[in-house]
Length: 289
Figure (cartoon, rainbow, N blue to C red):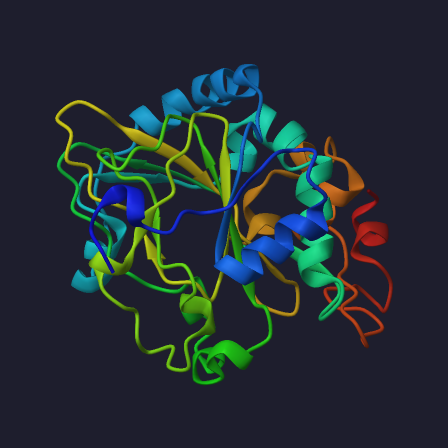
């Protein structure tokens, strides 16, 4: 593949008015799709402001004892979790966004039914951070890796740009078509990747089978700030244990569909009479939601 920027493949670009089914079709076909203006400028400003204090209190780098995982997290990268508690705009507007829920349904209803949130993280890549090692998000569910392209849909990532994403400041990089490879132990090479360049407010949706990684931030003064909100089949355990983290008084203020995707309501995957229940009844009844 040529290294000339203008001859590289590009990711399809859609708008908020594009039907969710079409966005998912393009994502499945190419591996990733850019959604312009997913958030308004005002939402970007508010979320950045709401997350400024907890982000400032956080040190860059990883506290994980495993060297490989610390490297994966990034030595000049901040990862802020528990965004539902930290940001009112995020929990009330982004997580209750119609297009977000339409995409969740289009991705998961046909094959497995209900879906919920894997995690929600603010990932800020600082100056001098090396490129993240290439990986597939579905590797979180190891048995699926052996099934490669034939595995059921396990996880799909929506990355929202809170600052511009450029090739120089660490835009997420993907290998289009890698979701169709036969060997999922193969994660390709950096030369095969292309950057998902975004304006603040844009989003990129990419499948859990596609090879990707955060890019290198080669600038001296830019911080690439993104919100990652992966969605997954609710038959699988999420990364963040929201019912143990989000205060009940906050959960009570949320819409039923947001309560459901963060685990405060029961899940009804295809073929199941219900999971995540209490006494064979919906968890919401027990919690008096």
